[in-house]
Length: 416
Image (cartoon, rainbow, N blue to C red; front, side, top):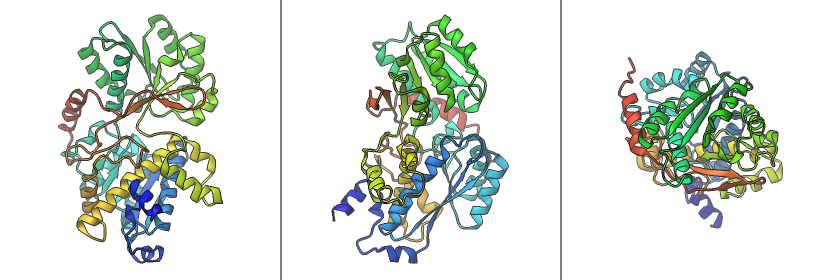
């Protein structure tokens, strides 16, 4: 009974039925999730962890009876960050009965989105793709669970405002970004908030892949911004760390997008990275109930879905968190509309999520027919040399301003 209560608390084996058994789960129609990922080119610094977290969670759910008796299948394919290959992956898996997909790439997501919308299939679009896709009244089948880059950057400004005594009128905020759609994404919202709050916004683009930042940091040294919000990833954080030391910019004024992980910290150096700030909607570390359960159940017995070292990464936690939300949506869909689960009933399940946080693994999300993101909450954490220390509670700020941008953008969308 204790294990059932624990599983229910993380909304995972709420998938367990009182009379369900592992054997009975194998007799029902499986619930398939298509992970068409870039496993070979641009996003290999994150996709293995995302996939492994999702696969471990599916294994645990299946070992405990499935989702309302239905086994879960995670089907992983490589699209190499090529839109056409991503669309081909979608079409192939669609023929196999898959109706819920995650592409983990903005170019591929944007290419596949119109097809999924026309077909009435679920697009799981967390941390990639269109920022306006949280508008559920326009993007009915798209679920960008968690904060978009627009909301995350707005929350970063709110944090800086609080650190500066509640007044940004004399502040100078730098935005260091990869000069590529991912990096450019927050600029519009930052400009809106600059006008509202009166701070001086300075833009510092760097070319892909982010190895050449000397020009940007020379400008930062001259401009002396109070904070730098960073929209880079992977090795570009290592380069930025070196440039901060060279240009004597304080590490504790560097506020990173969520794409800063344990590999980056090791490459920077634990002590050298001390003070760095990160915005996130997923708690890192292994002392979280469901993460601890997966480690104790599988990795302690040599049965995990992949290398154990990947479980020490915040991106692994992200894979578990996003899939936990999908599992809960599936459970609610079946409870509300019966078996088998369909795209329509899973959509209804997603839109029934209220304050779901996977037992503390992620920021609480509440999905509605109009808000498919869940509220956009993040928190800021700081690296203390050994671990990430939360500096704020989960919160979402400047919602009115961000939603003005969302609605203006989504109003221009057409499937035709």
